[in-house]
Image (tube, rainbow, N blue to C red):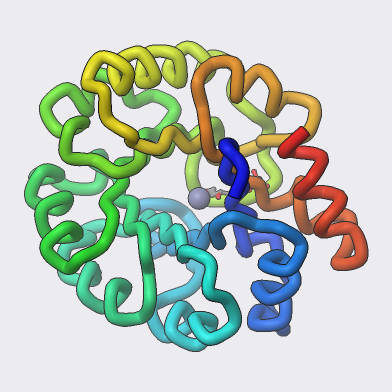
Length: 218
Ligand code: DX5
Ligand code: ZN
């Protein structure tokens, strides 16, 4: 595993053959499998639930990086944990008691992440950052793949990196949305050490998954 973690988002995969797609990105060098869960309420799109996560679990041994864009979230944590999630990331904007959500994820024996929408400041995490295994900076508004990277999120990546360094923790700093080989260098330079990529990995077809993942790593 390299220093930079690549977590392809299967939102951009062929949903008619998801198991095969997960196996293909695993073999192509993905470090984690990013799974976008949307509820049609917190975000204006509907995707997949714990049943699909469970069905995908036998197709890869790589960590399942499950991004929950659902509200309320607490009632579903156990289902996703049992389905095989390794990392569970929720949005503090999605409910009133985010600290409780983080505690609940950890109690289930899973790694806990916080995802910040583009308009949410870094300070949202001031009193919970030390509890987190991962921070996910959304560089697009959540809900859809294929959107353009919002430039001012680079500043937020820098701010969170600074706070993680100050704490001295090994919290993963992941960036999600519009990440491409053209902009990933500045994302990494700002302090990210994990990249989510949907379109950038899947759009060139299965025969190029390894090349597309390598292009982000380089
Ligand atoms: C957006 C999702 C992202 C998205 C990334 O709500 O969280 O993971 O699928 O897709 P691209 O890389 O196409 O922006
Ligand atoms: Zn995501």
